Structure formats: structure tokens, C-alpha cells
Image 1 (cartoon, rainbow, N blue to C red):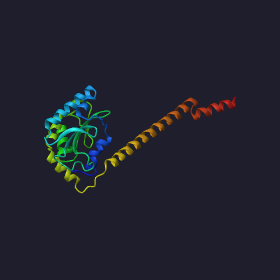
Image 2 (cartoon, helix red, strand yellow; image 1 turned 60 degrees about the vertical axis):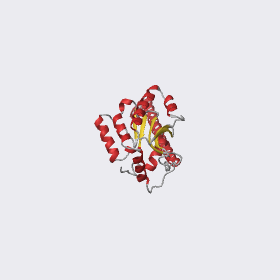
Image 3 (cartoon, rainbow, N blue to C red; image 1 turned 180 degrees about the vertical axis):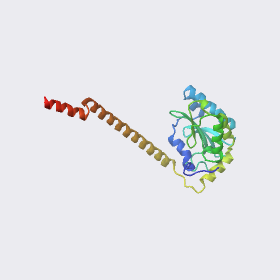
Image 4 (cartoon, rainbow, N blue to C red; image 1 turned 135 degrees about the vertical axis):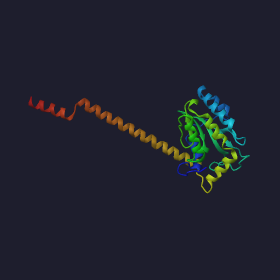
Length: 231
């Protein structure tokens, strides 16, 4: 697997999921699912079944950063996630976000290798792929190519994921999650401020247009003034 620092930034990539996500306070997967609307619970439950049916036995399932997580437990990889040593090494996450549901799958973020294979297989399925760096977004279960997801999970056993992760992070200085979260927050604030400014500008333009319409155009005003002078 070949990674692009510019595109993927693996040391930051996993933490970015969490910094941008809606984080639940549920302490178990069952509690997380129980707190969802019925349609989302059914959709995430179906995707969960596909993941679990293809997941290498060296992975574990549990709540991680407020989402359903699939990770390499410390019994298999003691160092854990280097950007957040308190956590085991993440591999995938499943979550209900505000406007969509999402599967976060780090093994397919690369431009070539597994990533290229994944995108090609998805195209062949005839389904539309709505994907960010590692986030596969969907609104309905029918949006997903479940067989392609299952194959991607199956092709990345825990030992292979550990080797991939170590190669990708070798020699890189980890960025603390707090710093990443601060960057994401600043970017969101800037985007919100820009949208607010655009809305204000649009409203101002609308007020000017209404004022002109109510008072008449400059040429009309001059004509009215001329008529009053002649009278």
C-alpha cells in the first residue's frame, strides 16, 4: 500500500475522523445502536454484520471515540495508536452522523493498492460511491456495495494492517489529537464566518434593491423632478 502524505496524512487521518464526528456517550455497541432511530439502527446493524462476518479474529469490536470501532487490541499490538497512546490501533469505525451514516475504513484511503482495488470494485457494482479520504457516506443501506466492503475488510487481516501502519508512520512525528481538533474547529469556524458574511452581503444587496424599487430608478427620479420644475 502506498500512502500520500499530502492526501492521506495517516498520523492525522484517524484522529480527524473523530474530531469531525458526532460522538456518542454510549459505553457499548448495543447501547449505541439502541439509541438510534429504527431505520438507522437497521442500516448500521446490517453493515455491522458484514464487517463482523469478514473481520479477522485478531481485531476487536467496541466503542472507540464515540463510535462503533474495530481496532487491534493491545494484546495483539501493545503500542496502540501513536497519536493517542491511550487507544488501541483503530482500523475502522461505523457511525450515524447528523445528515448521513458513515463507514470509516483506513485501509482504502491510498490512491493505489487496496484503495484503487476498492474503487474499481465499487464502480463495477453500479453503485454511486460517496467517499472522502476514508469516509464512505450513505443515507440508506441500498446505497452500499456490501460485498465490496466485505472484501476490503477480509483482505486486511490485523497483522497486515499493523505492518501497513508501521510503514506509513515510520519517521513521522505524530500530531496530538488536541492540535488536530483545534485545526478542525478553526476551519469550521472560518467556514461558518464566511457563510455568515455571504448571507449578510446578500441581505444587504436585497435591501438596496428593494429601496431602489420603492423609490424608482435615478432616471425616473430626475424625470419627476423635471416635471415638478416645469409645473
